[in-house]
Image (cartoon, rainbow, N blue to C red; front, side, top):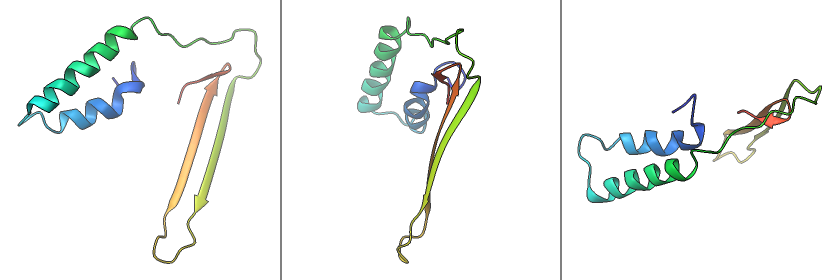
Length: 86
């Protein structure tokens, strides 16, 4: 899932936390994920072969200045041939 379908990584990891004692709600979420996979099985990433961009990385970060809430926030996008890959 991490290499082939990163779009469902969070949902599958979160749902797997309840695999030892699943409830009906967890089963419903599992069915929802399966329906999502069935509906998106033909989705593909398109790499533009006509671009000379190669690998482009955009990042942003911020450090909270509130003394009670000191933590950093970071975001990034990796693009390969014009298509986001991470």
